Length: 157
Image 1: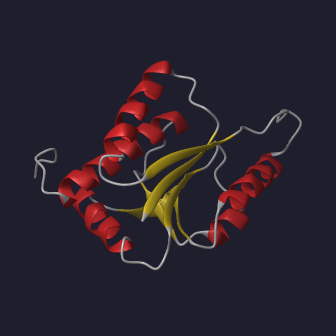
Image 2: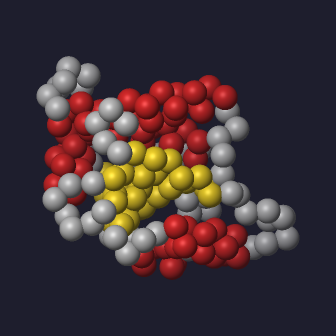
C-alpha cells in the first residue's frame, strides 16, 4: 500500500526542509511514499477564517481518492504512543485501500467537509506546533514506525 502526506504550503525554513527530505528518503526504503504539497491560498487578508478553511478544504477534498484511508493530523485526534502507532499502521496495510493519506491542514485547521471525509484523526500532541514543524515531527514518527515493524534498533524501549 502507498503512503502519502498531504500538506498545504511549502516549507520556508531551509533546515526543516532538509530534515523533511532526509526522513522522506528514509521512509521510501520501507514503503512507496510521497509528499503532496498544495499551494497556499492567496489573498487571505480579506477572508474570514471560515472562508479560508472552506477554500483550503476544497483543495484537500479534490486530492482525496475513494481508495484512500484518510487520516487527519489534528489536535483533537487520538494520541498514540509510538509503539501503538506502529501496530496501528501495520494493521492499516491489510485494509482494502490503495493509499494511506495523512493530511496536515493550514493554520486554522480543517473545514467541516474535510473532517467528514476523514477515516481517523490522529494527534501528535496536545501542544500546538507550527505546521512546518509538524511535518518533520510526523515524518520522524513514521520512519520510527517502520523501524519498529522491521525490528531495527532505531527505537529504544
